[in-house]
Image 1 (tube, each protein chain N blue to C red):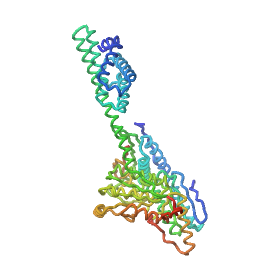
Image 2: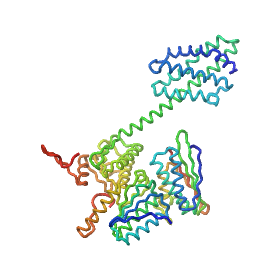
Image 3: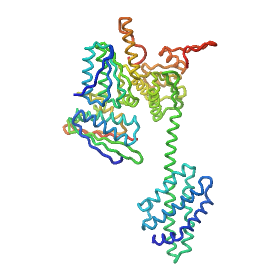
Image 4: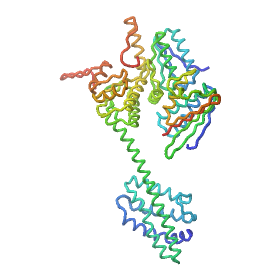
Length: 288
Length: 133
Length: 135
């Protein structure tokens, strides 16, 4: 029966394609995709659809006979997600094929029963395929969001080179477990890259500290030590100081300062450097 | 790389090094980050040493695994050694027998996402650990 | 049997570990170092682990032991070049290598050792080590 369905549609492939493109142009935003690309995609899809119809009776689109069609839909779903199409618009690509196909089946029908059966079959197939594009679309969006999240994570904790051999890591916002991990790794990596032996971790912008965060901070400091760098914590506000004491977290011999400036001074002292104000016409003792 | 499995016998100190190398290759193949790879390899080293020293030799099965869309690596260490009579003590930090098995189990557990251990005194020990991307 | 080479640099000994060591090799290194420190009356040991991709609890303990033993023999050990991934993992394992001096690289490590020798020479006694770094 699918054979018959295939034959009818294949005989009129060109007309169906024309009708379909007309339907799509009515419904779709023209600026999102070039006409040539749309024509190419539609031609390819129709061809693949017909091939799968011809290859057998199977109507389960998850089966092997429909793998080429699925692969094609995955490809365009992905590219349309990037182009800014909504999932509905992408699914409409498939659904809008129904009308031209139904019209053709009606014109060619030899009996009411055949027409009903064919219409039903093609309808379920295209419905499944349309829904499939939505699933794939969803997955691509999730991947894009996940990647954007990663990039945001990196941007929100930049490691700054304050001075020769002195890094500063101003942390803004709360430190959840995952963020702390990436912060830790970023800092340690920069320590190696810049050969800095002092890192100032400034937590002025951290509203609250819980046990886990405090532990993570300590782990970072211990790891930095193992690598040969010292950490100074700056920006500990009174509330946070109380929380740390209350939690029973021991900071050991980690130096803490209330301000980044004070911590910087400690760092300079350790290095034996001084910053001297330049008098007019004289160079500074130590250039920044 | 899904479905890859590899058995490595653990009979000599050099085998512990081999386990590290094979674990590294598998972990890298599954796309784990450098830090996560290091954690897995270090845990594997601890457990391989346990298998050799305490378990009197055994083997490890390395598997590339998939859970939904997540990829990971699973290691199963088995030996027919004397077993561990008091698992709770062995899993508590600071427990020591002989060459300092104390740091082996709790440490390895901290480095992995999944950890399970079965041991029957007189029959042997099996430790299964996994780390996901 | 293969051994890790130990180089003499003035009053110091330099050890660069470049292979994934099996346990026996690590213990042999510890013995060899102890013997050489005594023999050369070395004042310092620079242990370069920048090539190590993995340091587990056993190797960690060997490093700790090397530092302790050398101190008893009046030599200071500085461990240099630990990789970030290794440091993170060691901390997770629960090893902090308390009492072991560390530095970012060979250059910084040598600075520390040289300063110590110079200070000793001036004052004739063991100097107080500066800074809050694993002392």
